[in-house]
Image 1 (cartoon, one colour):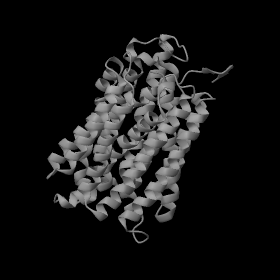
Image 2 (image 1 turned 135 degrees about the vertical axis):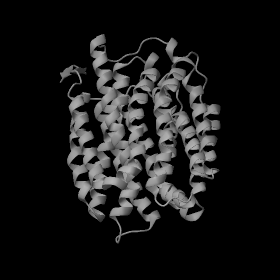
Image 3 (image 1 turned 180 degrees about the horizontal axis):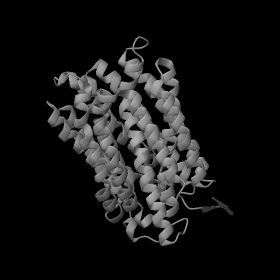
Image 4 (image 1 turned 60 degrees about the horizontal axis):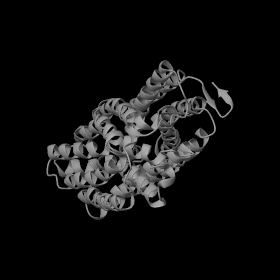
Amino acid sequence: MSHADHSLAVRLLLNIGHGLDHMFLLIFAAAVAVIASDFGFKSWEDLMPYGVGAFILFGLGSIPSGRLGDLWGRRRMMVVFFIGIGVSTLLVALTQNAWQLAIALTLVGAFASIYHPVGIPLLVQKSANPGLTIGVNGLAGNFGVALAAMATGFLIKWIGWRAAFAVPALVSIVCGIWFAYICPAETEAPAKRKATAKVKLTPAMLARVLAVMTVSAATGSILFNLSTNGNGQLMTERFQGVIEDPALLGILLAVIYTVASLMQVVVGKLLDHFAIKPIFLGIVLLQIPLLLLASYAQGWWLFAALLGVMVFIFGAVPFVDVMIVRYVDDRSRSRVAGIRLAVSLGISSFAVWLLGPAVKGVGFEVLLWVMAGCAACTAIVVLFLPSEKTGQEVVA
């Protein structure tokens, strides 16, 4: 199945799937304070570690998900994704204590692991403009992040925290049924197709690219997970005396995520025309001063600093997927993406586990300094990317 064979409805559902994937992983972070109170915990920090299973499985599950995508079929795996994540999120809404919650969230993470190694390669197969396609897909994913912040706030306010899980779960199940109906069956599994790598590298250079891809994805995922899981509580703390309505704070956070998401389209468009290395390096370097500014900012100054931080954290997201499209043959993209995700998300899942205890122990100020250090590590790793040919030009 080529990119040209995807109808507009199929492409729309694949992008909606990315949004739902990120949304489901962040509903818990947006609702954690209310759930903690309901389950008898003294503070949200004490309940936060129970969500780590979702992020561990989100990473580790990428290996079997990617393998099944290449060898069994990406369309089939996407049907499993939509319906499986919907049903498991409904189970979260039915939980009665912290350990039931932890088990149900871990199941959500297992199904969430399907999207990135399967949905994105399915979307970009033989795409003429993979950078732009990935940028738009990233925009959709981060709309899911924004929606998690806003929709969860309103559903909790109007109905309760259980509805914040149940409503999007039903939407996902409907999307899965629709996707199964409109997406044509694949004639053969991706692993059996002809080679399609865009840039040919020696085995040694490819190994170097894969190492840079994995390490930069790990540090980038740490920043992404710490920020998207912690921003809600950070704004609650720093906006005290300015705005204290959770729904209104959710809207402000959604505005930050929506504006920042547009950066992915810009970056994706640039990557269709220019080399990866200089753009990636510039974006990562800009994260550092903004994270340091956010560590001290209060009220509306924090809003401005967080907007800048998230613009460049979201802006860094398309790079690894574009590297996979540029350097890796489509026959094995899901497996390569799966292994890369397992390593990077496995590492960054511990960041989610440590978030509550870290904030309780040292506060957001120190945490943001640590995040700036992670951005510096990413910048160092990106320097090791090899030169590549873009059009007729060799760009270092």
